Length: 126
Image (cartoon, rainbow, N blue to C red; front, side):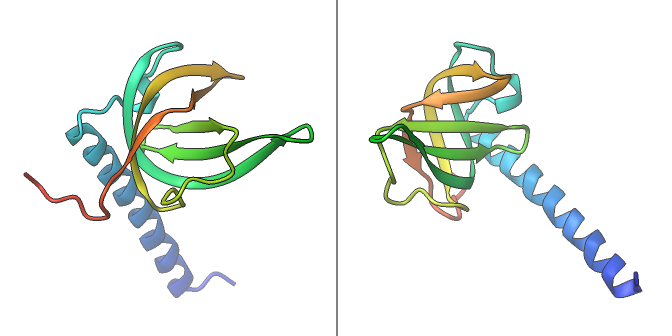
């Protein structure tokens, strides 16, 4: 049953998601970052966004990498730190600025072992 309350909640949730996406894009542009959607293969870039997912990918017996999804509101960039299981402070909801070279694997942008900076929760305007 689709009540007025449920329809209202879905509309508000959709509006919040759109606001969040726009807010993340504005913060990324203010930081001088390249939108992920504009990145070309093998381009050296700086991107700013929100961590949406963190996972450890196992390859074989001992090889592993930490995979992090970074969303700037335009597209998601996969960050891969080879040989790592975790990095202190990197978890869903955290804002990051990363820099490095982007490669496309299966049509998706990936940045291996990027330099990173964890940004404060509420960046102050300067």
